[in-house]
Image 1 (cartoon, rainbow over the protein chains, first blue to last red):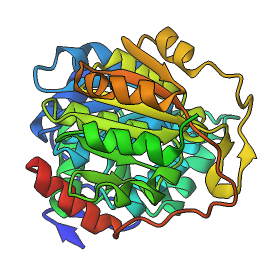
Image 2: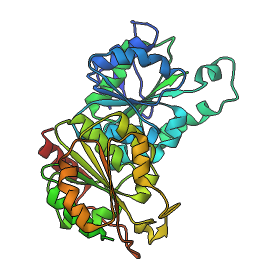
Image 3: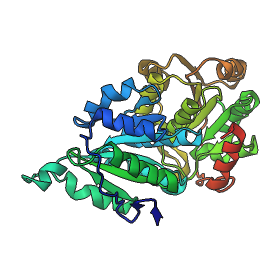
Image 4: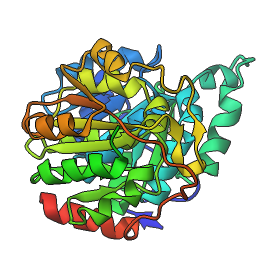
Length: 182
Length: 187
């Protein structure tokens, strides 16, 4: 399935971008605003948490703080039933916890849920190595839930990549995951 | 102590135009009392997430008014949701049907059955309007005011336990429920 320059498979591929900036809080916020996102439902980690001040400054995005990741996914489901356009932002460890909520919202209710999931220690895994097994399990678990995904690196990808990925999912009315290397 | 059906009959009489999100055992009773487009049977579910679905819906549609009906087993799976509800005020009324057990699995007691102060937990979470009833006449007397009142609210109803129940079936497929609901609330 194709949507513009974005090709869907089990891995969501994005085209090479010519517009590179650091994938930081302002870039994420600008991207989500550009895609018409109305709510960010989240539980931050130490990397995602650096986005908070930018998200709070957004005039068009409401930040909803939850207590567990499965709860965040269900709140997003309710928002979508009510016509809002939320994204869920959580760490991969929370994704591991939230499997049943994800199964229900995406595969029972068939709602096009978009998640941004921080992958703890992914950058270390690709460079210096790590004893953290989070990167080992994240992609297989996303695959197990049958969700298209793309891995974004803060030093290599920017706002245009986030916009391309989110819009591709929106245009296809598909659920999917933007994995954020940490 | 009231039965679940009696408790829900009172709610059906007082819900007015609000969306009612039922889950687990209440799905087996509610459609016999009300089965319109604003009655959303959250089944198949992710147990405990009915309150969170209802909160999201209420936040998306602030003027709508949403009622979340759940059992104690479901709430115990998502106690943090009380904190989230308190921190994101919405037009949401939570109705807890506490029978002390997991009814749809045959009737095994929940942890700490009969000793948990759910109203106290809701108050401590910061939910501003909290009520508790174990008497049907008292519930009848106050239900209209509670449902019409400001949200979020939490109402703890002690109801009779039922044993040997089967997992209920939703009144219609989920896709049809969602289509009906969205049509009724203007999406």
